[in-house]
Image (tube, rainbow, N blue to C red; front, side, top):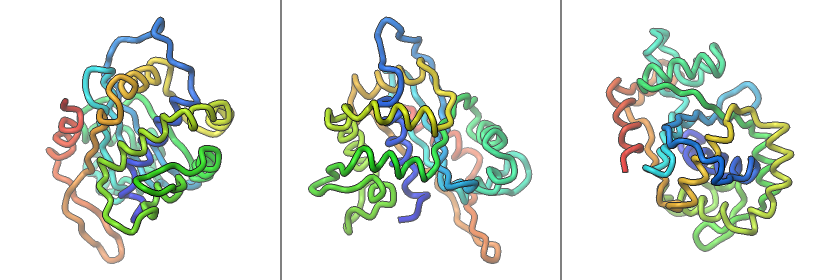
Length: 242
């Protein structure tokens, strides 16, 4: 399965690992339930493999996940670049600005993880049970752990449940060092607390995901997807709705 189709899995995995490796939540420091939009970047060196928008609403509503295929064309800046091209030319901040325009919402938080770091995290966590068989995190990311059809929503919730098991939680100290030294993020205590509380109180069922859909086109060997302006806003509203 292509990386673009695995962005939801990647985002859930990374956010849950951040909870394990971050500051342990303490109710005494609970923050207001403000909506937070987080962009999760999956890179391989200078290349953007995938990007996902995650909307956290405290414990009030679902944790919304929007997969943004890297071949989606961005028309907000009038350049005609795809997501991957905008990242290569403008960097993380430039791409974020264009996505803010298209989603019509501020995006103030980000988390960026390179493939090399993911490989190390996968090694630390070890295999997890996905359905009736164990799978490495690499197999989960690429969708190669099963030869059958994968239902993304069920898969995401299964992964979330596996990553909150005691067997994984006890490995938090190893993840602390890895994430503090290799992961780029501006997520603070409040952000981590809101994600933790949402998943802890309502379980994996709180996760709502959707991908940006549109018309796939070709210009020579260049593939891109046209997404109508209203779809950007509508899809974010859909995953954020209880």
